[in-house]
Amino acid sequence: MKFIKDNTRLKQLEDAELIARYQQTGNLELLGVLYNRYMHLVFGVCLNYFKDEEQSKDAVMQIFEELVVKVKVHQIQNFKSWLHVLTRNHCLMALRKASRNNVVSLEEGLVENSDFVHLDMDNAKETQLSTMEKCMESLPEEQRISVDLFYLQEKNYKEVAAITGYDLLKVKSYIQNGKRNLKICIERNSGG
Image (cartoon, rainbow, N blue to C red; front, top):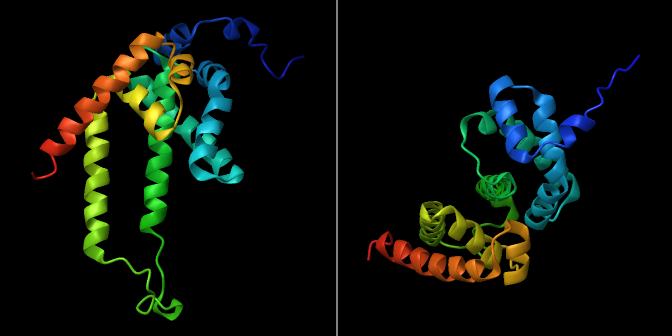
C-alpha cells in the first residue's frame, strides 16, 4: 500500500500545463510539483535579502502559501520569472515591515544618539522608495525583471539572460530602456 502518490507523471509536465491544471482543479499536488522545481531559487533570493537561513526558510513556506491564491488568479506566461518577482516583492515587503517595527526606546538613548535621523528625512526616503517601487511596477515585465536582476540583485548581462531565458541582446535592450523609463517615471512622480 502506498501512502505517498508517485508523481513522476506530474514531474514530466511543463510549467504551463501544471499551472493550467492547478487553476482548473485547485489540486495542491500540482502546485507542489511546480514550486519544487524553483524552491531552491526562491530560497537563494530570500537568503540574498534576509542574510538569515531560518528567516529565508520561513519565507519559502510563506511564498508557497501566497502561490496557493495568486496562481489561481494571475495569467502567468513565464512562471520562473513571475515567481522571482513575487519572491523579491515578498522579501522587500518583509524588510520594510521589519524596519517600521524597529522601535528604539528612550532608555536606549534615542534622543542623545548622534545617528538619530530626522523624521522628515525618513519620510522623504520612504516616499522615494515608494515612488521607485510604483515606477518599477509600471515597467513592462521584461524591463522590470531585467532591471531588478541587473541593478538590485547585481547580476551581469549573461546571468540575467540565463535566469530569465531572454536573449542576451534583448537583456541589454531591456535594461537600457527600463533604466530610461524608470528615470522618467521617477522624475515625473517626484513633484518636480
